[in-house]
Image 1 (cartoon, rainbow, N blue to C red):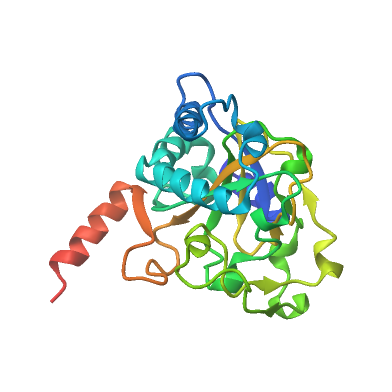
Image 2: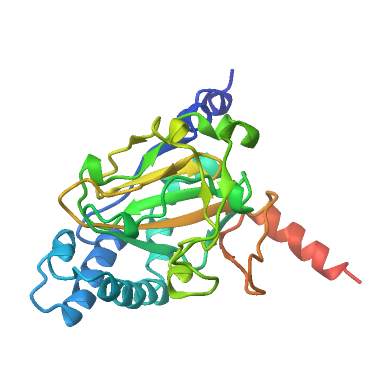
Amino acid sequence: MSERKKILNNNYLINNGWIKVKLNNSKKSALHHAHVSILKFLKKLIPTLTCLEEYHKYIMSDNDHLEVQVLVSDYFQNKNFIYDIVYENLSNLTPFIGLDLMLQKKPYLRIARPMKIIDNIGFHRDTSYGSSPYELSLSIPLCNITKMGSLSVISKSHRWPDIDLNSKFIDSDRVTKNSKLHKLGFPYSPIIIPNTITRQANPIHTKFGEGLLFSLSLIHGQEVNKSRFTRFQTDVRLVNSLAVFNNHRSSAAEYYEQLIETPATYNARYFQAINTN
């Protein structure tokens, strides 16, 4: 059996639906730069803030938190930190998804304060909202977090059929379509998975300098950050450009951008373009 065949047959991601990957977090890395830049941005709003993990001690009002998160999220997306973070760590990601790689343009920035249910979106599988099972999500801590503050998953649930979940959609009483919360990644029509299922979830301690890579059909989430520290985290979706997926979600704008492309695929696209009537 070839080495390539062995990788595909024994991959932890295949069996469990998730895997932790190492990310460069040296002082000169893109990840460290993002961490420092977010802290500097926040210090303009909160001059006495010394670290991201202590954010909750300064922003206690839910209304203030929403306004700050909108500002920080816009800053994070506009600076395109995620492009450099992913590109710098391609060697640890392409074995799982391939070299024709597309990257979500506007990744979400999550800020979960300790014991604040309102800061989290709960357990879900993204394919229930129309995402493709060919897509992967990469959850990246932007500060130091403990196990109890980490994202939780139900291992192997990416192989469960939807019908077995007994889930249902409800209308949110606080999120409306195109609202600030919706644009931050909170669903306006969330799916509810019974706690008989979600209680099987376990937190995956993902440290600063690591990423949690998982299938969008995997049940994952967090109902509350049970640690003593605020969790700053981004999650970005990745997809092979040759896979089946929808690049136009709720708007006409493209959801993904091409990050890298093999010469074979580039030549194929060029040939198709010049022969399209």
